Image 1 (cartoon, rainbow, N blue to C red):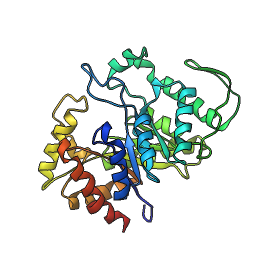
Image 2: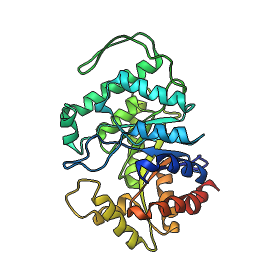
Image 3: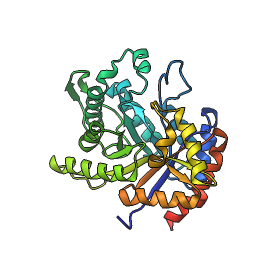
Length: 313
């Protein structure tokens, strides 16, 4: 897989109050994307969280050309008509810079309870939402009767800036997410994947799509990539384990798994590991920072100035 144009993004990480300034900085540094994810109640007691499209709207208004990736919005929380209108408004207002990254969530059942939703129904609810969303973006007078949503004669006006609609990147880690990507997505955005697992997912999704007669040209192969840059791989791994241990639910020591899933070490170490992901099929990287909060600005700048230029050249 050579001669492919690689694109690189960064998750907005300096705090909601710094969203506009950080987005401008990312654009000045040459990143292709800025990203933002969401939770509605991240744990109990809840940790700070935000709404992805709101944060990205601020980022979009502060910039001129950088792409805006939701990484990710939680589909089960949205009615498709509402999401279609929100995403369309943002796509038009930013002249077609939106990439809608979507996932089903489930790490924090308490947020589903807070919204009156069943965490056990998040998969089928998300599939229905995606089916209706694509119809609303491409048709007028949409009728739909499903298990969770029912529409009659619904039209979204005006339509999105991007035609036929903003690209939808499906996130996840397991087979259900891959099936969703192959059937209803325009891209694949897994997280905590090794290069080997990413290569296998490319093969599996491509096989699923081909089996259903779908043309995969233009499909985006993306990766939500944690990175920790340090004086040594060992020190970077310790920083990554500490940072991720506070974000994800895992019964064990994160130091045992970061080596397989994260990009770690000096810039030279990171370049070699990123190349392994490129060889596995990744074309779009969305970096998130597995480091102490005070180290995030250094990571943002180091990736932009010491790592990305290697792949640009």
